[in-house]
Length: 292
Image 1 (cartoon, rainbow, N blue to C red):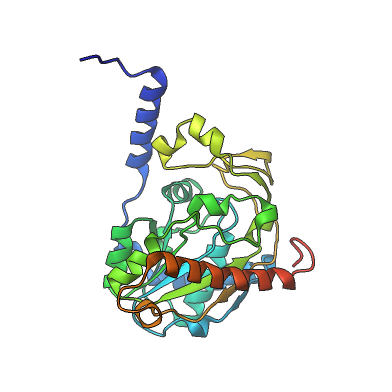
Image 2: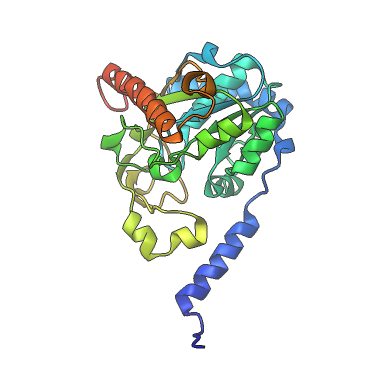
């Protein structure tokens, strides 16, 4: 049997991957702290209203109680302003006692730990993305926010701001069917104007084995404050004061609309199509980038 010792790059990749996983906080639903959210909410909502001119519509479309899967399009790089605005609006509208969790990439949670000026994401209910975590939250009766497009969508070029791009990821549909919960689409625009996103950098990510090390399929390139040329967005960026608009669409009961055994591909096409139609309409409302 032929064997070879792992090369230097492979050893470095393995070591970096281990260290990265070790530092990621485990998905603990009990870390969500309603008292912390209550204390932080007024100041953060004021910031969102003044700096990002937050406009959140359709919250009445979310069922008032019980588990629900909120499915959003994702923008803004690693500085996820659409999540920030929607989370504050949800907590204000439904109250901090309603259990609400946001699934995020491991890197976002790790960066949150390293940035002292950023609110404690875990206390707000942000947990590492994973089907098991989402299932546990839904089983406990919580509202759960997922972004199927993940890092692939949030780092798309700015000129694709009005495009919903989940990259064909359909796990959220299977999750909703298993849990027996409705899907509520959440459509947002403006995040891709908080910097000038130039490229996802997929080839560069593959060359550097970032998928293996950090579960990253992209190494985005953008022009952003305060860095100028920003490669990777690893330290995030200061978002430009782009107007963020979020629109919540009516809930979709999958089995009621698609039958007892829904076809996942059909459901995916329907949901993405409905979201794209609304995002196109929101884009048509905007007259200028950033200004809205």
